[in-house]
Every structure is written in structure tokens, then in C-alpha cells.
View 1 (cartoon, one colour):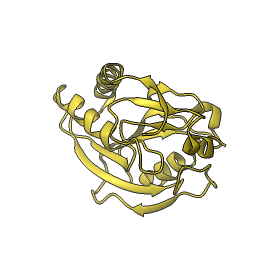
View 2 (cartoon, rainbow, N blue to C red; view 1 turned 60 degrees about the horizontal axis):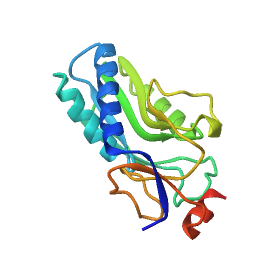
View 3 (cartoon, rainbow, N blue to C red; view 1 turned 90 degrees about the vertical axis):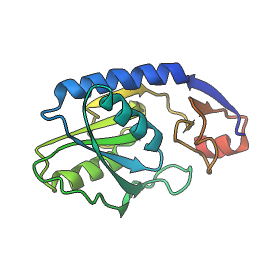
View 4 (cartoon, rainbow, N blue to C red; view 1 turned 60 degrees about the vertical axis):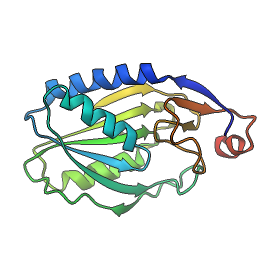
Length: 185
């Protein structure tokens, strides 16, 4: 396992997801939104958010998109590619875009514009982690779980070279790890 330090434990994440669900439910113009998760890092967050909304009697439809921005844990070149589009008709619907990390903002900007072109009635974004220190595009998420340091994150769906995705918490890689040293540069 990669050397890491826990940043947000399971209980902290669970409480924050429930708080986000309450905020989203309060703002939704309808009780049957479409939640679109970005693969692969957001799948656990998306699942927990869908369940948290269901506890508030919000019955969500779910779709997934695949967008690559990194390819491997190296700094982004700024080019995001859409590999899998959502299949649901978003015209006139309430749509919540769900992602794991808002980093440079380039991916979220591209996907948000792509979804806006599908004419949803209401379009908002929710990210688990926000790294404002890395922003390159002028975008902010409507709902943010936690502000995160400028470090590589693993756990709760996020990984480094395929490792750490299944950890039940969010952790930062430690610079002593050769993979982390490669990633952090």
C-alpha cells in the first residue's frame, strides 16, 4: 500500500455527504433530479450522495460520464477528453454534476458546458474535494464537500496508479513514497 496520511475519516465524510444532500435537496426545483457522476473517481461519492438524497425522499436518476484529464497520476496537460457521454435526455431536467475533485477546473468547465448544451432546466455541480490553489479555469462548484491541500489524494474512490481506490477514507500520499514523489512533482 502507498504511504499515506488520513485527511478525512469515514465518519467525517459520511456527515459531510449528508449535509451536502440537505443543501442540494433544499435547492432542487423537483424531487426527481438526474445525478451525473464522472468516472472513475466519483463513483463512491456519487453512490453515497444518491443514498443520502433518497433518505430525504429525493429519487434520483443516475448516469455516468467518463472524462480523462490525467491518464495517469501526472500533472494535467490541460486537455480533457470525453470518453463516455451521459445517455439520459436532460432537456428540461434538473441535473447535478458530481465529481471527486475540482482541481484545475478544466474538466469541470468542459463537462458543465457540454451538459448545458443539452438544455437542462437546472444545472449545478457538486464536488467532494476542492483544491482552489490549483485553479486554471474560472469555475467554482455549487456544492463542495471539503477544501483540500495541493497533494495527491487516494481513497473513497480516488487512486494513484490503481492503488488506494477502495480505502474508506480520504488520504494524501506521503512524499516518502516513490509513487507520491513522482505524483507530487
